Amino acid sequence: MKELEFEEDEYVILSQDKMFPDSILPLKTDEAILTNMNFIYIYKNLFGSIEDIKYIPLKDIQIRKKEACVSFCKKHGMLYMQLSLIKSNFLFGIDYTGDMFEWKYAIKNVALASSEDKRVTRCDSCGAINSGYEDQIITCKFCQNQIKI
Image 1 (cartoon, rainbow, N blue to C red):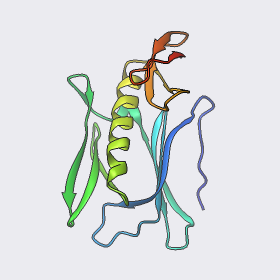
Image 2 (cartoon, rainbow, N blue to C red):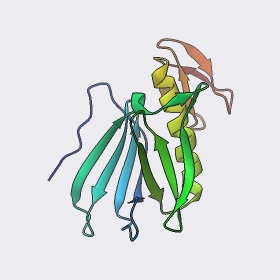
Image 3 (cartoon, rainbow, N blue to C red):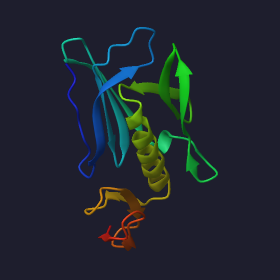
Image 4 (cartoon, rainbow, N blue to C red):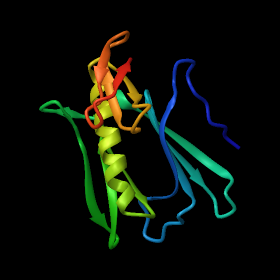
């Protein structure tokens, strides 16, 4: 059985269970984790045991016109999120469609920030994802709270 491994300076930004892979009859048992360095997809069996772990470095997500290529697509009659990678695509679904917008926003912002050597952090006040350079003080885009990166 595989175990989840993080780099020394890697931290979790977003995580969720009840994910499902690109499959005709998917089980909604998988989990996804977005860190400041990777998108991690954890394949689980029916009983919740880890079958496999896929690490996708954020630097592998395509950036076009200063925007990370993350989109929605319909396949097998279900809505999926698609990460356009440099050499391929990765599709996954989320049990609750409303959460897809949060994931899309978070992945786009974190991938773009990592491509520009920026740091990503959550606002202590409202929880929004913000980015900036190390030791920089920025203003949260949503609540105007001051954040030190």
